[in-house]
Amino acid sequence: MTLYAPFYYTGFACTADKCRHSCCIGWEIDIDKDTLQFYKTIDGSLGERLKNNIAETNEISHFILREDERCPFLNENGLCDIISQLGEGALCQICDDHPRFRNFYSDRIEIGVGMCCEAAAQLILSQTEKFRLVCLENDGDEYLYPEEEEFLAVREHMLEILTDRALPLENRIQNLLDFCEISLPQKTIQEWADFYLSLERLDNEWTVILHQLKNTDVTQLSVPETEKTSNAFEQLLCYFIYRHLTDSLDDNSLWQRVAFSVHSYCIIRSLCAVHYSKNGSLSVEDIAGFARLYSSEIEYSEDNMEKLLNVMSQQ
Image (cartoon, rainbow, N blue to C red; front, top):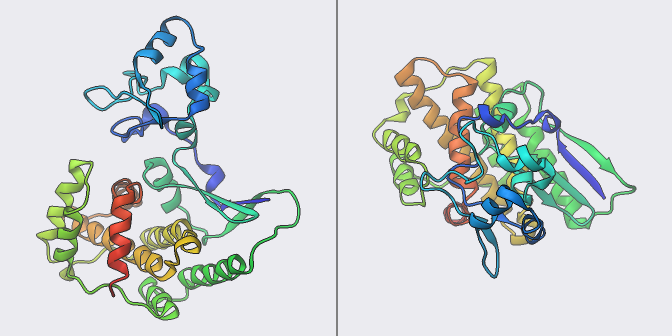
């Protein structure tokens, strides 16, 4: 078994109490069965709090969020009381993993960090090196099915297209679409804004910026073409390609997922253009902020992802 990750993966670290958009707020936090049994062994005041703040079900149990949607163990200093008293090893699996994701093959695992986390988004989009994978673990010869080898070769070629810095990014994107022999659905930005407004939404900030997008003629707007912003948008595209294409081995949706990746970049770039027109500046931190919001609203909702992929198949 081999384990691969983007070259920046080992640079990720949770910012804990310094995080402005804590993953311990607004998300239902499931508890795996092994951790649940461990929590039942905890005595004292923490054990009593665990008992009173977990909703047990026949399937997946979860923490009972407070009225302000904070995890009951996220203290007022922005730190986790479970970690403070029991150590990081006492976290349930989802808390320990987040924001990591994994792609599975027959004899290979790929890992990465999701952009719903502001620290991950900032890490990814601030990279200046071209996207590449590094091997973190190798227990021997890697065996892959022929269709997996073919997929990895195709994906590698897509990433080579997107990282060909001899060409402007928009040319690279068109070359990618031409290579895949696909095009994006023909919708105006106003129609896309309406579509996103029809989806499940969690954060009111997302609703606000979608209305801004709907009421703005982005065809007249642009973003500053600096080295930093160009690198950030390139990394954004590579992130979507790396994260989402592997599932096509199971559902035969490769071209829809490529279209989704490019479309997601286009939406985030449009949001950045609106921001630039209003504020006169656009930083990597700004781009990361929009990417984080998009990721948390879309990538982490199975229903929203399914609806977007369905639209991508209706070209």
